[in-house]
Amino acid sequence: MRGRVDLVELADVVIAFLCVVLTASTLDSQDQVHGNPYSHITLLFFAVIVSLPLVLRTRFPALAWGASSVALAVTATVIGPGTLSSAVYLPAGVLVYGLCLYAVAVRCRTWFAVSAGLVTLAGAIVIDSRTAIGAVLAAIPLLAGAYVRSRRSSRVELAQQARQHQGERALLEERQRIAREMHDIVAHHMSVIAIQAEAGPRKVTDPPPELVESFRDIRASALDGLTELRRLLGVLRTGTPDTTPQPGLGQLSGLLDSARNAGVPVSLSVSGVPRELPQGMDLSAYRIMQEALSNAMRHAPGCAVRVEVAYFPSSVVIKVRNGLDGDAPAVSGNGSPAAAGHGIIGMRERAAMLGGQLEAGPTDEGGFLVTAVLPDTKPDTKEPVEDPR
Image (cartoon, rainbow, N blue to C red; front, side, top):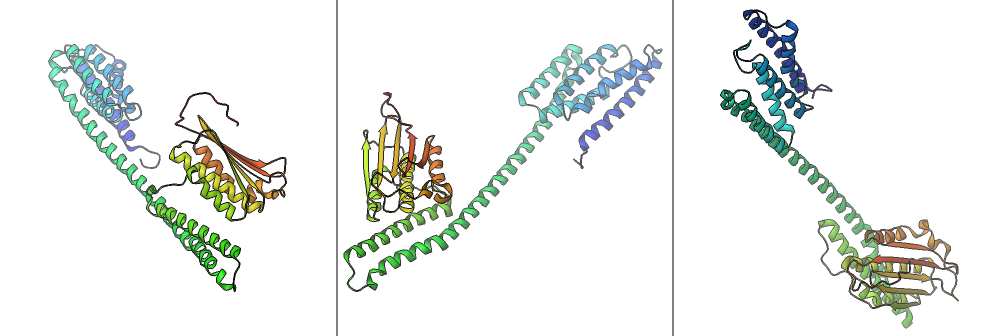
Protein backbone atom coordinates (compact mmCIF):
# COMPACT_ATOMS: atom_id res chain seq x y z
CA MET A 1 0.00 0.00 0.00
CA ARG A 2 1.12 3.52 -0.80
CA GLY A 3 -1.38 5.76 0.89
CA ARG A 4 -4.75 4.61 -0.45
CA VAL A 5 -3.27 2.94 -3.53
CA ASP A 6 -2.68 -0.81 -3.64
CA LEU A 7 0.35 -1.26 -5.86
CA VAL A 8 -0.53 -4.90 -6.59
CA GLU A 9 -3.97 -3.94 -7.88
CA LEU A 10 -2.44 -1.12 -9.89
CA ALA A 11 0.06 -3.54 -11.44
CA ASP A 12 -2.77 -5.96 -12.26
CA VAL A 13 -4.66 -3.20 -14.08
CA VAL A 14 -1.58 -2.24 -16.09
CA ILE A 15 -0.81 -5.87 -17.01
CA ALA A 16 -4.45 -6.50 -17.93
CA PHE A 17 -4.44 -3.45 -20.21
CA LEU A 18 -1.24 -4.60 -21.93
CA CYS A 19 -2.70 -8.07 -22.35
CA VAL A 20 -5.82 -6.62 -24.02
CA VAL A 21 -3.77 -4.50 -26.41
CA LEU A 22 -1.28 -7.24 -27.36
CA THR A 23 -3.92 -9.96 -27.66
CA ALA A 24 -6.20 -7.79 -29.79
CA SER A 25 -3.29 -6.85 -32.06
CA THR A 26 -2.20 -10.48 -32.43
CA LEU A 27 -5.71 -11.67 -33.18
CA ASP A 28 -6.16 -8.90 -35.78
CA SER A 29 -3.00 -9.98 -37.55
CA GLN A 30 -4.05 -13.64 -37.56
CA ASP A 31 -7.54 -12.65 -38.65
CA GLN A 32 -6.14 -10.88 -41.72
CA VAL A 33 -4.09 -13.94 -42.61
CA HIS A 34 -7.21 -16.10 -42.49
CA GLY A 35 -9.33 -13.71 -44.58
CA ASN A 36 -10.93 -11.63 -41.79
CA PRO A 37 -13.59 -14.16 -40.60
CA TYR A 38 -14.13 -12.15 -37.37
CA SER A 39 -14.93 -8.51 -36.77
CA HIS A 40 -12.69 -6.20 -34.77
CA ILE A 41 -15.33 -6.01 -32.01
CA THR A 42 -15.41 -9.79 -31.66
CA LEU A 43 -11.64 -10.04 -31.42
CA LEU A 44 -11.53 -7.20 -28.90
CA PHE A 45 -14.15 -9.04 -26.87
CA PHE A 46 -11.98 -12.17 -26.79
CA ALA A 47 -8.98 -10.09 -25.72
CA VAL A 48 -10.97 -8.46 -22.93
CA ILE A 49 -12.51 -11.61 -21.44
CA VAL A 50 -9.15 -13.40 -21.14
CA SER A 51 -7.46 -10.33 -19.57
CA LEU A 52 -10.17 -8.79 -17.37
CA PRO A 53 -10.12 -11.46 -14.59
CA LEU A 54 -6.64 -10.24 -13.63
CA VAL A 55 -8.19 -7.03 -12.28
CA LEU A 56 -10.37 -9.01 -9.87
CA ARG A 57 -7.82 -11.45 -8.48
CA THR A 58 -6.68 -9.39 -5.47
CA ARG A 59 -10.11 -8.74 -3.99
CA PHE A 60 -12.05 -11.69 -5.46
CA PRO A 61 -9.54 -14.47 -6.22
CA ALA A 62 -12.13 -17.26 -6.51
CA LEU A 63 -14.30 -15.22 -8.88
CA ALA A 64 -11.26 -14.18 -10.92
CA TRP A 65 -10.10 -17.79 -11.28
CA GLY A 66 -13.59 -18.93 -12.34
CA ALA A 67 -13.88 -16.15 -14.92
CA SER A 68 -10.43 -16.90 -16.28
CA SER A 69 -11.29 -20.61 -16.56
CA VAL A 70 -14.43 -19.84 -18.59
CA ALA A 71 -12.53 -17.38 -20.79
CA LEU A 72 -9.80 -19.92 -21.55
CA ALA A 73 -12.37 -22.58 -22.38
CA VAL A 74 -14.36 -20.25 -24.66
CA THR A 75 -11.37 -18.89 -26.58
CA ALA A 76 -9.82 -22.37 -26.95
CA THR A 77 -13.08 -23.66 -28.39
CA VAL A 78 -13.94 -20.72 -30.69
CA ILE A 79 -10.57 -19.51 -31.97
CA GLY A 80 -8.31 -22.45 -31.12
CA PRO A 81 -6.28 -24.56 -33.55
CA GLY A 82 -7.80 -24.68 -37.00
CA THR A 83 -9.32 -21.19 -36.87
CA LEU A 84 -7.19 -18.15 -35.94
CA SER A 85 -4.70 -19.18 -33.28
CA SER A 86 -2.04 -21.79 -33.89
CA ALA A 87 -1.98 -22.59 -30.13
CA VAL A 88 -4.78 -24.09 -28.09
CA TYR A 89 -4.80 -21.23 -25.58
CA LEU A 90 -4.07 -17.57 -25.95
CA PRO A 91 -0.74 -16.66 -24.27
CA ALA A 92 -2.32 -13.77 -22.39
CA GLY A 93 -5.07 -16.07 -21.12
CA VAL A 94 -2.51 -18.56 -19.82
CA LEU A 95 -0.61 -15.76 -18.04
CA VAL A 96 -3.78 -14.39 -16.43
CA TYR A 97 -4.92 -17.87 -15.46
CA GLY A 98 -1.60 -18.62 -13.76
CA LEU A 99 -1.72 -15.35 -11.78
CA CYS A 100 -5.29 -16.09 -10.73
CA LEU A 101 -4.24 -19.56 -9.55
CA TYR A 102 -1.47 -17.95 -7.50
CA ALA A 103 -4.00 -15.59 -5.89
CA VAL A 104 -6.27 -18.54 -5.10
CA ALA A 105 -3.41 -20.38 -3.38
CA VAL A 106 -2.49 -17.27 -1.36
CA ARG A 107 -5.92 -16.05 -0.33
CA CYS A 108 -8.34 -18.99 -0.46
CA ARG A 109 -8.63 -22.09 1.68
CA THR A 110 -6.37 -25.05 0.97
CA TRP A 111 -9.21 -27.32 -0.18
CA PHE A 112 -10.29 -24.69 -2.73
CA ALA A 113 -6.75 -24.29 -4.08
CA VAL A 114 -6.38 -28.07 -4.47
CA SER A 115 -9.77 -28.22 -6.20
CA ALA A 116 -8.66 -25.47 -8.59
CA GLY A 117 -5.59 -27.51 -9.52
CA LEU A 118 -7.68 -30.63 -10.18
CA VAL A 119 -10.17 -28.64 -12.25
CA THR A 120 -7.29 -27.24 -14.28
CA LEU A 121 -6.00 -30.72 -15.09
CA ALA A 122 -9.46 -32.06 -15.90
CA GLY A 123 -10.27 -29.05 -18.08
CA ALA A 124 -7.05 -29.42 -20.06
CA ILE A 125 -7.84 -33.09 -20.72
CA VAL A 126 -11.38 -32.28 -21.88
CA ILE A 127 -10.44 -29.32 -24.11
CA ASP A 128 -7.33 -30.88 -25.66
CA SER A 129 -5.76 -34.03 -24.24
CA ARG A 130 -2.41 -33.06 -25.76
CA THR A 131 -2.20 -30.14 -23.31
CA ALA A 132 -2.79 -32.32 -20.24
CA ILE A 133 0.94 -32.67 -19.60
CA GLY A 134 1.37 -28.91 -19.79
CA ALA A 135 -1.45 -28.46 -17.29
CA VAL A 136 0.82 -30.00 -14.67
CA LEU A 137 2.72 -26.71 -14.78
CA ALA A 138 -0.28 -25.19 -13.00
CA ALA A 139 1.23 -26.66 -9.85
CA ILE A 140 3.95 -23.99 -10.02
CA PRO A 141 1.72 -20.99 -9.15
CA LEU A 142 -0.18 -23.12 -6.65
CA LEU A 143 2.99 -24.17 -4.84
CA ALA A 144 4.36 -20.62 -4.97
CA GLY A 145 1.13 -19.27 -3.53
CA ALA A 146 1.11 -21.92 -0.79
CA TYR A 147 4.69 -20.99 0.13
CA VAL A 148 3.89 -17.29 0.30
CA ARG A 149 0.77 -17.99 2.34
CA SER A 150 2.78 -20.07 4.80
CA ARG A 151 5.37 -17.32 5.17
CA ARG A 152 2.69 -14.71 5.70
CA SER A 153 0.94 -16.87 8.28
CA SER A 154 4.23 -17.32 10.12
CA ARG A 155 4.85 -13.58 10.12
CA VAL A 156 1.34 -12.86 11.34
CA GLU A 157 1.69 -15.46 14.10
CA LEU A 158 5.05 -14.03 15.15
CA ALA A 159 3.59 -10.53 15.19
CA GLN A 160 0.66 -11.71 17.32
CA GLN A 161 3.02 -13.44 19.72
CA ALA A 162 5.16 -10.31 19.93
CA ARG A 163 2.10 -8.18 20.72
CA GLN A 164 0.95 -10.73 23.28
CA HIS A 165 4.37 -10.81 24.96
CA GLN A 166 4.48 -7.03 24.94
CA GLY A 167 1.08 -6.89 26.61
CA GLU A 168 2.07 -9.51 29.17
CA ARG A 169 5.28 -7.61 29.90
CA ALA A 170 3.38 -4.36 30.34
CA LEU A 171 0.91 -6.13 32.63
CA LEU A 172 3.72 -7.66 34.70
CA GLU A 173 5.44 -4.28 34.98
CA GLU A 174 2.19 -2.70 36.15
CA ARG A 175 1.66 -5.47 38.69
CA GLN A 176 5.19 -4.98 39.96
CA ARG A 177 4.61 -1.24 40.26
CA ILE A 178 1.43 -1.86 42.26
CA ALA A 179 3.32 -4.36 44.42
CA ARG A 180 6.01 -1.77 45.15
CA GLU A 181 3.45 0.85 46.07
CA MET A 182 1.59 -1.55 48.35
CA HIS A 183 4.83 -2.66 49.99
CA ASP A 184 6.11 0.87 50.53
CA ILE A 185 2.81 2.27 51.83
CA VAL A 186 0.43 -0.38 53.15
CA ALA A 187 3.01 -2.86 54.44
CA HIS A 188 4.91 -0.06 56.15
CA HIS A 189 1.83 1.18 58.01
CA MET A 190 0.82 -2.37 58.97
CA SER A 191 4.29 -2.94 60.42
CA VAL A 192 4.09 0.33 62.37
CA ILE A 193 0.70 -0.69 63.79
CA ALA A 194 2.10 -4.05 64.93
CA ILE A 195 5.12 -2.40 66.57
CA GLN A 196 3.03 0.25 68.30
CA ALA A 197 0.53 -2.35 69.52
CA GLU A 198 3.38 -4.37 71.01
CA ALA A 199 4.91 -1.31 72.70
CA GLY A 200 1.60 0.22 73.85
CA PRO A 201 1.16 -1.68 77.14
CA ARG A 202 4.76 -0.98 78.12
CA LYS A 203 4.06 2.74 78.17
CA VAL A 204 1.62 2.31 81.01
CA THR A 205 2.63 1.36 84.55
CA ASP A 206 0.83 -1.80 85.63
CA PRO A 207 -1.56 -1.89 82.63
CA PRO A 208 -4.90 -3.63 83.15
CA PRO A 209 -5.23 -7.11 81.60
CA GLU A 210 -8.01 -5.91 79.29
CA LEU A 211 -5.69 -3.29 77.79
CA VAL A 212 -2.88 -5.81 77.30
CA GLU A 213 -5.26 -8.26 75.64
CA SER A 214 -6.68 -5.54 73.38
CA PHE A 215 -3.21 -4.50 72.21
CA ARG A 216 -2.30 -8.15 71.71
CA ASP A 217 -5.32 -8.62 69.46
CA ILE A 218 -4.44 -5.49 67.52
CA ARG A 219 -0.90 -6.75 66.98
CA ALA A 220 -2.13 -10.19 65.95
CA SER A 221 -4.56 -8.71 63.44
CA ALA A 222 -1.85 -6.45 62.02
CA LEU A 223 0.56 -9.38 61.64
CA ASP A 224 -2.11 -11.52 59.99
CA GLY A 225 -2.89 -8.71 57.58
CA LEU A 226 0.82 -8.24 56.91
CA THR A 227 1.20 -11.95 56.15
CA GLU A 228 -1.74 -11.86 53.72
CA LEU A 229 -0.33 -8.73 52.13
CA ARG A 230 3.09 -10.30 51.60
CA ARG A 231 1.48 -13.34 50.01
CA LEU A 232 -0.47 -11.09 47.68
CA LEU A 233 2.64 -9.09 46.84
CA GLY A 234 4.41 -12.32 45.87
CA VAL A 235 1.60 -13.17 43.46
CA LEU A 236 1.67 -9.67 41.98
CA ARG A 237 5.42 -9.70 41.46
CA THR A 238 5.71 -13.14 39.87
CA GLY A 239 2.36 -13.38 38.11
CA THR A 240 2.15 -17.07 39.08
CA PRO A 241 -0.90 -18.55 40.82
CA ASP A 242 -0.77 -18.75 44.57
CA THR A 243 -0.45 -22.37 45.73
CA THR A 244 -0.55 -21.70 49.46
CA PRO A 245 -3.66 -22.95 51.33
CA GLN A 246 -6.48 -20.42 51.12
CA PRO A 247 -8.96 -19.67 53.91
CA GLY A 248 -12.50 -20.92 53.68
CA LEU A 249 -15.64 -21.44 55.73
CA GLY A 250 -13.73 -24.04 57.70
CA GLN A 251 -11.79 -21.16 59.31
CA LEU A 252 -15.00 -19.23 60.06
CA SER A 253 -14.64 -19.66 63.83
CA GLY A 254 -11.29 -17.90 63.80
CA LEU A 255 -12.75 -15.01 61.80
CA LEU A 256 -15.65 -14.63 64.23
CA ASP A 257 -13.31 -14.83 67.24
CA SER A 258 -11.26 -12.02 65.76
CA ALA A 259 -14.41 -9.89 65.49
CA ARG A 260 -15.42 -10.73 69.07
CA ASN A 261 -11.97 -9.77 70.31
CA ALA A 262 -12.51 -6.42 68.66
CA GLY A 263 -15.58 -5.89 70.85
CA VAL A 264 -18.30 -6.93 68.41
CA PRO A 265 -20.83 -9.46 69.72
CA VAL A 266 -21.22 -11.98 66.90
CA SER A 267 -23.62 -14.91 66.80
CA LEU A 268 -23.46 -17.74 64.27
CA SER A 269 -26.29 -19.85 62.89
CA VAL A 270 -25.58 -22.75 60.53
CA SER A 271 -28.39 -24.66 58.77
CA GLY A 272 -28.14 -27.62 56.46
CA VAL A 273 -25.27 -30.10 56.34
CA PRO A 274 -21.85 -28.44 56.05
CA ARG A 275 -19.75 -29.93 53.26
CA GLU A 276 -16.52 -29.32 51.43
CA LEU A 277 -16.96 -26.61 48.79
CA PRO A 278 -14.96 -25.96 45.63
CA GLN A 279 -11.82 -24.00 46.45
CA GLY A 280 -12.80 -20.83 44.59
CA MET A 281 -16.28 -20.81 46.07
CA ASP A 282 -14.96 -21.51 49.58
CA LEU A 283 -12.46 -18.66 49.38
CA SER A 284 -15.04 -16.21 47.97
CA ALA A 285 -17.52 -17.10 50.73
CA TYR A 286 -14.86 -16.47 53.35
CA ARG A 287 -13.82 -13.15 51.81
CA ILE A 288 -17.41 -11.96 51.52
CA MET A 289 -17.98 -12.83 55.16
CA GLN A 290 -14.75 -11.08 56.14
CA GLU A 291 -15.63 -7.89 54.28
CA ALA A 292 -19.19 -7.84 55.63
CA LEU A 293 -17.89 -8.15 59.22
CA SER A 294 -15.31 -5.43 58.58
CA ASN A 295 -18.02 -3.10 57.29
CA ALA A 296 -20.17 -3.84 60.35
CA MET A 297 -17.30 -3.06 62.73
CA ARG A 298 -16.34 0.05 60.82
CA HIS A 299 -19.77 1.60 60.26
CA ALA A 300 -21.73 0.29 63.26
CA PRO A 301 -19.26 -0.21 66.13
CA GLY A 302 -20.77 -1.86 69.17
CA CYS A 303 -23.79 -3.27 67.37
CA ALA A 304 -24.41 -6.99 67.52
CA VAL A 305 -23.90 -8.96 64.33
CA ARG A 306 -25.69 -12.15 63.35
CA VAL A 307 -24.09 -14.44 60.80
CA GLU A 308 -26.18 -17.10 59.04
CA VAL A 309 -24.78 -19.80 56.77
CA ALA A 310 -27.27 -22.07 54.99
CA TYR A 311 -26.12 -25.11 53.00
CA PHE A 312 -28.47 -26.10 50.18
CA PRO A 313 -27.89 -28.90 47.65
CA SER A 314 -27.18 -26.45 44.83
CA SER A 315 -26.02 -23.34 46.66
CA VAL A 316 -24.73 -21.77 49.84
CA VAL A 317 -26.47 -18.68 51.25
CA ILE A 318 -24.60 -16.28 53.55
CA LYS A 319 -26.30 -13.54 55.55
CA VAL A 320 -24.57 -10.97 57.74
CA ARG A 321 -26.92 -8.68 59.64
CA ASN A 322 -25.99 -5.89 62.09
CA GLY A 323 -28.11 -3.46 64.09
CA LEU A 324 -30.31 -6.17 65.67
CA ASP A 325 -33.29 -5.63 67.96
CA GLY A 326 -32.25 -3.81 71.11
CA ASP A 327 -29.03 -2.47 69.58
CA ALA A 328 -28.24 1.06 68.61
CA PRO A 329 -29.12 1.57 64.96
CA ALA A 330 -26.32 1.14 62.47
CA VAL A 331 -24.65 4.13 60.93
CA SER A 332 -26.67 5.24 57.95
CA GLY A 333 -23.60 5.41 55.74
CA ASN A 334 -23.13 1.65 56.01
CA GLY A 335 -25.27 0.99 53.00
CA SER A 336 -23.87 3.79 50.92
CA PRO A 337 -21.38 2.74 48.23
CA ALA A 338 -19.59 6.03 48.72
CA ALA A 339 -19.22 5.39 52.42
CA ALA A 340 -18.41 1.72 52.06
CA GLY A 341 -15.66 2.36 49.50
CA HIS A 342 -15.03 -0.60 47.25
CA GLY A 343 -16.06 -3.25 49.77
CA ILE A 344 -19.59 -3.89 48.51
CA ILE A 345 -18.42 -3.64 44.91
CA GLY A 346 -15.75 -6.26 45.59
CA MET A 347 -18.26 -8.57 47.28
CA ARG A 348 -20.63 -8.29 44.33
CA GLU A 349 -17.80 -9.02 41.92
CA ARG A 350 -16.82 -12.14 43.86
CA ALA A 351 -20.40 -13.40 43.83
CA ALA A 352 -20.89 -12.59 40.13
CA MET A 353 -17.65 -14.35 39.25
CA LEU A 354 -19.16 -17.58 40.57
CA GLY A 355 -22.50 -17.00 38.84
CA GLY A 356 -24.18 -15.92 42.08
CA GLN A 357 -25.61 -12.68 43.37
CA LEU A 358 -25.21 -10.40 46.34
CA GLU A 359 -27.63 -7.93 47.85
CA ALA A 360 -26.66 -5.32 50.43
CA GLY A 361 -28.84 -2.64 51.96
CA PRO A 362 -30.46 -1.23 55.11
CA THR A 363 -33.16 -3.15 56.93
CA ASP A 364 -36.48 -1.88 58.26
CA GLU A 365 -35.09 -2.05 61.81
CA GLY A 366 -32.33 0.42 60.97
CA GLY A 367 -29.58 -2.13 60.58
CA PHE A 368 -27.81 -3.42 57.51
CA LEU A 369 -28.05 -6.80 55.77
CA VAL A 370 -25.67 -8.46 53.32
CA THR A 371 -27.02 -11.56 51.55
CA ALA A 372 -24.86 -13.62 49.19
CA VAL A 373 -26.15 -16.60 47.18
CA LEU A 374 -23.30 -18.68 45.77
CA PRO A 375 -24.18 -21.59 43.46
CA ASP A 376 -22.38 -24.86 44.15
CA THR A 377 -21.09 -26.42 40.94
CA LYS A 378 -20.64 -29.80 42.68
CA PRO A 379 -23.83 -30.46 44.65
CA ASP A 380 -24.06 -33.58 46.78
CA THR A 381 -27.68 -34.27 45.93
CA LYS A 382 -30.19 -33.37 43.27
CA GLU A 383 -33.26 -33.14 45.49
CA PRO A 384 -35.09 -29.83 44.98
CA VAL A 385 -34.82 -27.55 47.95
CA GLU A 386 -36.30 -24.10 48.21
CA ASP A 387 -33.60 -21.45 47.82
CA PRO A 388 -34.41 -18.32 49.88
CA ARG A 389 -33.31 -15.71 47.40
